Length: 269
Ligand code: SF4
Image (cartoon, rainbow, N blue to C red; front, side):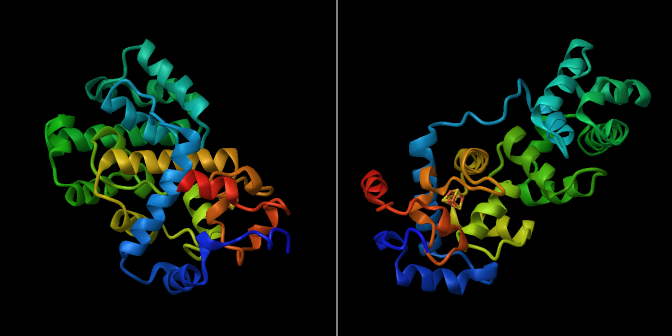
């Protein structure tokens, strides 16, 4: 296997043993897991810098974006949001009054536009029924209670609910996405199965219950996934997380053959 000459002091046998016990996430996060995830955080942050995640002008725009971004690229969402903004439709009351067909035509660039128009309508109906249309009142609800309520709204799944809670409401939850599953799986932190709730609970248990930290960690993972941890040909040799990739991982073959880890261990010191 390439890269086996790499001194692996950072992914020692003890670490691998503790990771092995944690496979499938059948455990409560410990101080060890917290330290590990903070190392990941630091390594990505040092290379990528601050992420300033979620480009939106208001909490309601975040919520609209979280719904529209399902199964589409962000560029398409931006076009739909531009349509809504230019027609003054980016408020809960405007969305509740607009005809469904007109709303669907405005969000058309985001794909699945009829379904997404229905989802937006469902959310504003919920907001009006439960919180008299007030986002401030909604976000004053305790996190777990609000999460449960959001998940009961048509068209809001776990990733959308957590995006709303975190990015629009500043609640300390972690948003799990495909990049999280991919990176955690490749690093043998999990078995790579996309079990949203268990990965979310694990990260939330291991990192501080601090919304900016959880926000930044998600953004760093997404950027690491997009830039390096690609689906078919990961760029491990240049990746900020290369020092944490266990040699027992099948992806260790993507490390450069002469990679010693020296630069990275210095960066982490
Ligand atoms: S080191 Fe490789 S496997 Fe790990 S996150 Fe980076 S690209 Fe993915």
